[in-house]
Image: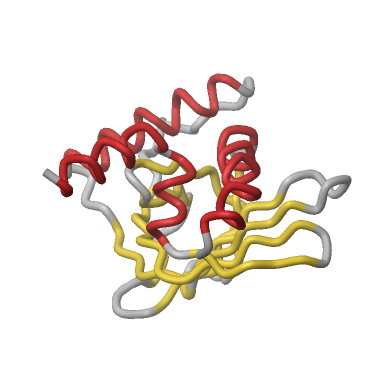
Length: 159
């Protein structure tokens, strides 16, 4: 993506991730194929809490983040998904981050029954503002969400 376009949209991408808590997630299985699900992004991967066990594997999964209708910000991704094992350290880290994020908005993650967590690794995305849209990569996402960390990694690679 050209740097000029990235500079125009990076703050909107960051704001969308900061302000939105729920996503629409397309999966197969679970008696339904579209879920409104809480999510968190850690290191460029999405962790999504579901109340039922999805059917995952080598299938592609889609996620959509939507800001309120007044600005019409939308970010959609297609990527590979896997269910996290509850004993996995990534599960515990993602569950903790989800609880913190939901706590900020006075919502609660129902932890009486541990949710199923999916890890979605984005592959191809589209960012829309109104009628305009641009394709973005996972690298663009990481640059927008973690600008300091990204700059430090780039500097280390040049040494």
